[in-house]
Length: 129
Image (cartoon, rainbow, N blue to C red; front, side):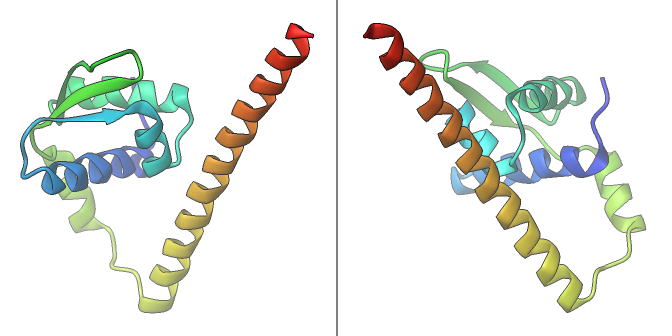
């Protein structure tokens, strides 16, 4: 399986930051939090988790229920370091705009997930009538 470089980097960054917040020890995270943090759909998230496990970036175990996963962050793969070294650093304004765009995409994805949940609840309530 292959992920786009940008998507791969988002997931590696997410797990690196989360591991750092947890003093690089194993941590439990909800799948919904992973989706919010990366802005990825559930299919992409599942694929990314599989790829990161195969690459040895993370190790996963089932969490307390089906909505959680226990993660141990191993390391960043060498390919990612090489790709970073080859890419040109972005200038201040462009970097700021890209950051704003990423935040807006994450907000939009969160709102889409909330809307889908509300639609499911509404459909459930209508079926109960």
